[in-house]
Image (cartoon, rainbow, N blue to C red; front, side):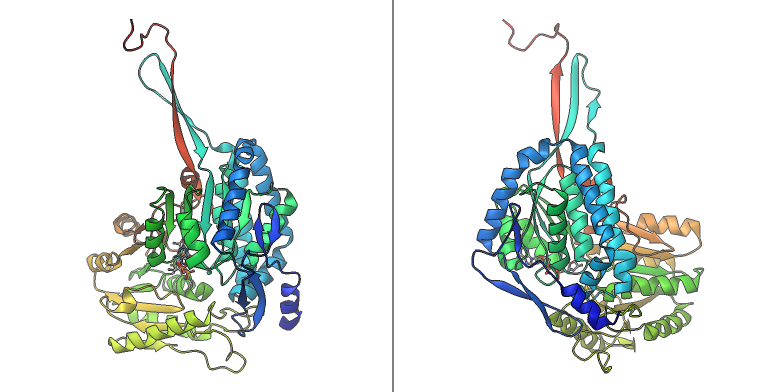
Length: 500
Ligand code: NAD
């Protein structure tokens, strides 16, 4: 089908309202937000913009739904998540088109990664719902102590724009499996797939109020979630700057906070690496999704003995990446998600040059007929020094910063010379070195001879300015529950204190 027809089809019947208490409603203010197609800047639709009062309504609905939802058999909660996974799978192609339209992700990536990973996540936590066991603790003689994990109550979830479909599943699936109800705020830039998920959740039978979706601006809807006294926990994915504000706003009712923030991932290529694999892996690490990934391998550290050969191959590969219409199956790189972000990424090219960095490849909008209206940036490779801003700040675009090292000690020092600590990659066939670096790198996730692998079973999250708490794995079930310790005196012979 021609991309124009795909675009029409992806736009058909879009949900544009807020989901509150099982009803699709306009915002109380009547205000809306225009959603743009990053490929050509056109307006896709206008969605209701949730304000503070809408968040309040959503929290009330979530509070009302909590007692019944949290006391439902866990297997029933799981069953609904499994049904949702099946429905998404049935609509895989429609979701791939919608995500490509809204975000600019190439449809081939949506088909291969975003949609299947989303299905897998709902399925994994659907299966997890009734496997969240407590424990019995060996305590003093005569006493039984057991520990249960209880849901927290209303969870507020705030998501960024870079992987909206997938991140909705990362937050909703475990939070709901654990028995919480949710008020979810997608990014105002890319709300469409989340709204469609809301429709499917209603269709498969999630009770009213269990999931509420309130797209809106961060400063209003997001801020209200962060400081709402009726919300017991906030799960936030976004920038480190906003993460810090969330922590401050959460202080009012001391809500639990989970933060998935920025990164500046080192991807280290040692002299013994399989160079072809490292070149491909490094390209995936920084160019997939136009580099708009918190775990992007944005600092590529090359041993000086292989730097020239690596750069030669890497820049050849970068120049061959096909930029184009996200809905065209041949497209390998789409536009960035917003005009503002495109301008920000390009500003780092000037910053790099100003500090003495050398642009090896790319460094501009493509200037290709047909792409002028889109928010494109060429795959960009810049040689820099560890002290340069482009080696320290998150660019969040298709922008690889190349650094070189002489020996392992220097590689480790450069890798850890960052406030962030999210993901890191190593390309080596030396087992001892691989383990030494896996231990030595200050980051929550390490990939050896691969990059950016994620799975719902494996904890995802970072150290330092990359945040705290974890998505996924069994870890995340701890995040969405709180332990309750119950003591029973099982020995009638034990006298109470102050016995008379
Ligand atoms: P952002 O921090 O600007 O926005 C994230 C979300 O927070 C959006 O929904 C936004 O509306 C909301 N928000 C903005 N201001 C707010 C406020 N004052 N109170 C409450 N909510 C507010 O981030 P972004 O530009 O959407 O996303 C890019 C950033 O996200 C990058 O820094 C990236 O590294 C990070 N990110 C991290 C992870 C991770 O898992 N560690 C994953 C993806 C993206």
